[in-house]
Length: 224
Image (cartoon, rainbow, N blue to C red):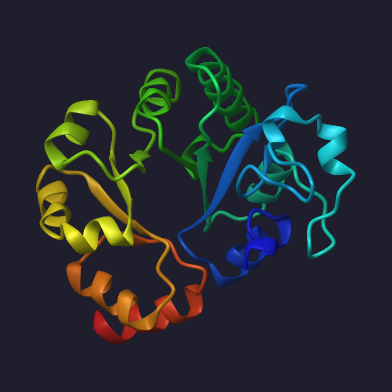
């Protein structure tokens, strides 16, 4: 699956399925280009944040596509009014750099008229705080790292949690605890049928999955 993560074709397929949202990871290259790529590594490049855009672009992904820019992703996102773009701003090497990337991302989203079609997620509390400060008021922002309870996340002033399946399986009470405080609950990345059934039974708000067809089928079956 990873060779297709964060490709333009993956976004197109999500739009065809009319799923709620398609997640994309944003890194900045050493020469200041915002790119969409899953993880730090790309072919023989160990850290895309330390490579130039041309270096990264010259190496095709496993499916033959090139690594897209955030701008190219937004252009494709604009073609659907059904599927939101869930932008994960990846951790970078200083808070100042992360603030700069948040600023550039939010400005680019606004430039393409996609404020209402974009939600944000991040592992770093700092990135969440800067998104809260810079993005339009009411923009959904969820915290990914899995270490804060509902009270703390509510105190952050953001909209929800987006925690790994293993975290919520160990602490299922966090699901209702967050929802009682008006926070949304997303769980990632759930592909196995038994795990999908469990998170659906728990009543989470959103599920990140690489198998949206199976997830949709189970939701329809279990939520009649």
